[in-house]
Length: 118
View 1: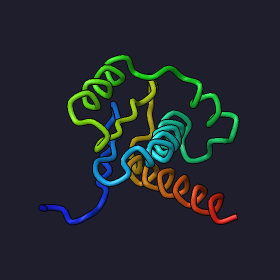
View 2: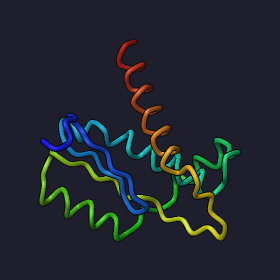
View 3: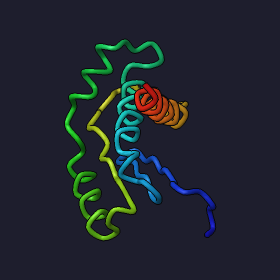
């Protein structure tokens, strides 16, 4: 194994994916990370909850949905791919989006762990 981890997470502008052990179990965290990063992309660092919820309601990128479906068909349960949301912004905040994605992903994992321990 080149990368000795149980699950590998990859984020792109079009989709995010988990590959490995319990890939499906990471779908919610991938989705939350996408919404967090795209909300910051469109509204900057000072976005509010309402902007986050409006972002969540945006449609998924059609080409990314097709890609996610094809990837699952080809690789099965070892991968979970979540399509990104459509967003066209005249002046996007692009610096730090990867960090924002990671923050959203880890927050979702922490919320799941806290909920399961109660």
